[in-house]
Image 1 (cartoon, rainbow, N blue to C red):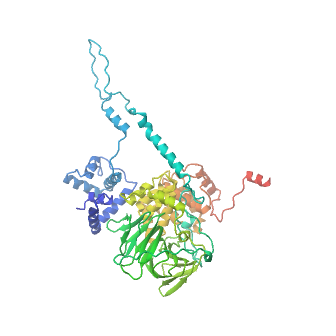
Image 2 (image 1 turned 90 degrees about the horizontal axis):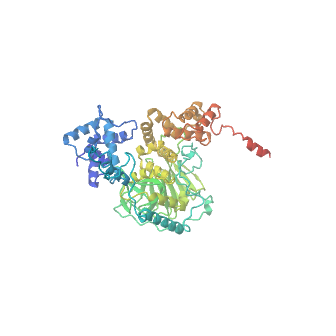
Image 3 (image 1 turned 135 degrees about the vertical axis):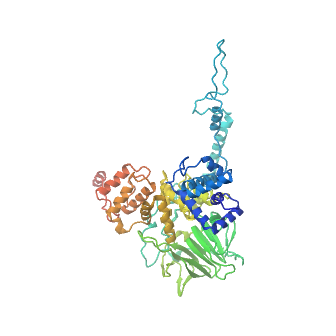
Length: 638
């Protein structure tokens, strides 16, 4: 297959056959111009400042020509001329790419409503189409029945009446089925009291997502950006009194010709395809090769067997297989996320992180947790990768890092920095994701709801984008988090300014923050994406609001004045208004004061402006306590 603009668009929109995908992918990889053109297509389709090309002018085009080009109905001479115009004009390139993407997402024929179809038929036979006849002078003819009943030019005709069984029968059947299902599920379904189903997940990012992390003597091993799905708090019992994990049989040995095996997941487990440069879903037990990237999504759990060691991927976790077939020591790289290892069948395991590696010497009955951990200081640019945290829940493990050996007993923790330094300590409060071997009841219910949105014959990215449109408050943040996990910032950034949907906007803020905490490369990608979304000047300010401000900057009156002025209606971007409100709430410790970024000209803006005018807009630890109201004072005296 020849590489043309039309085949490149079909390759980008995933409308080709598998063998055609591989062929075009190989040609794109070998052609620097094709790679540059594909990146340009991604860029121009996301630029909101590009207008629709007109019918005249240097960039004018005929929509019929665009349709004929996409349908492959143009003559070869016209095809060459049209493609040349698209390659030299961002406006024309954006139009043909966007139309092709929309047509590829439809996937089926467009259904015309019955009322519209009846109206179109009657417009061709209505009174506007009936020619006027001259009256005959000799005698007055009797009025004739019209071919169709005259209708108003823009009035919908009444649909033909149907029998009552056809009109009300389906509704009655559905109501009966719903009643039966409610009665049958009343006794079997219950929601845990600690996690009601109507609580939104990760709507408001926790301040700890970019809060300063002091260097503790005993480092806590916990992710700076918390998981969107709420988890019950871990039991704070003494480690010595904790109930040991019951012995489980070791996983079966991986065949000699296979690097690892991905167990059949009960959720979503993805593998990165280097040929198509996309994440493909693993629907059944799959053999993995050396250097394969595997990704688990929130809130699912999956398992991978490397040698005689089973890796349990907790929620959003990405690992790279480093073991070669028949390697004596299993090896993998923890790119991001959390991994739990319970009672391994091998006494050694090699773990890579941040271009470094360590070796774990494992007891047969040990339970160990591994986690990539960010130590980013608020207000500073992200210049180093995340650290590696090691937690021992049961048994004994020995960490071999270079020429240093450290042994951890139950409750022991270790933190390995990207520069190779190592800190150890004790932490009796183990994280819930390691203590709880199985998902909670609430986590299982959320997982089942989210899993129903994915279909085997649809690309995962398309299903995630569609899930953001779901009406359930539990699903939207999970979809935004999954979009972040897939690494498509061009689709993630517009959610920062999604109108009339604060749940998605706050989840997008949380997702972008947690994404750029993974390292300098992710930080640079976020900075470039913000410049494209908001412009160079406003993009830099948006990056500062996402990374947070230092304590010295929080006391700067100019910063507080700019944040309050960003809330004003003359700031067109809803995303910037949402970011400014998020920072004001974190700095001052107040709520939103009734401010709504979708309707910025209300009383909330007046409240923030009045606090700034009176000089009461200060950091939380410096603000004076609020004075009690007159009513509360009278109650206190009485």
